[in-house]
Length: 251
Image 1 (cartoon, rainbow, N blue to C red):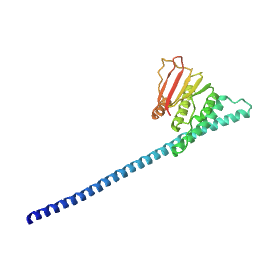
Image 2: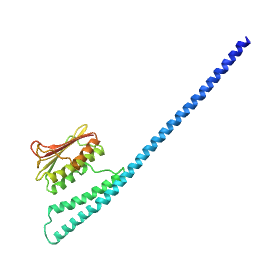
Image 3: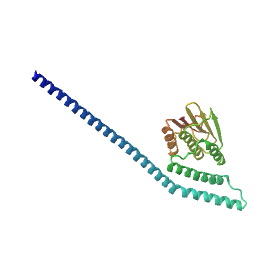
Image 4: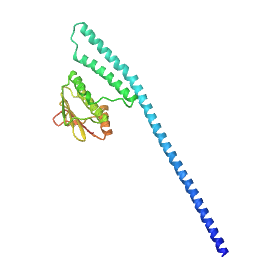
């Protein structure tokens, strides 16, 4: 009887010890898991902070390079145009429209550059968007390009990235028309619906269905903007002559 009780006590002590060892092991395991999770979170935070720091450094580097390479040249163009206009008026001569357009374009380019540098240096700087479309069209008309604007659908507030991309697409398309289309007129159409903003720019200048467009920096930049927003871009000659750019931007 005593022998049975002894074995029972032995088994009970062994069971208690086993439970205690298991509890200690589980506690240590949980502590180890918690430590590993904390290290993983710290590593993730470190990676995010490093990525943000590198992004800020890269933006500042680009801002410095833009400032050093473009600001001086644009300022020289603006000053020279202003001097030429002043001398022409002083002599009583009529100032050519092209010279006035150069002065205005250089001033606008300087403003755009400052705005771009502000965006690069500060994340909270609101960029230009379709609120400046009328000014853009007015400049194009003053440079000799007839432009019509049509807006359909209910105009509403759209994401800043979409707003800015739409403005830049119109700006680049009108610039390309002025450079490559020859004597031409242009039309800008903005179509708002529930999920898309469609931006379409057409001209009736040089260009035919047989011509294959060679993508330059302008078209490449347009495509990159649209793709980054999950949209679609078509840039191609029109069937009846001229060229068309159509961007569908999710809103």
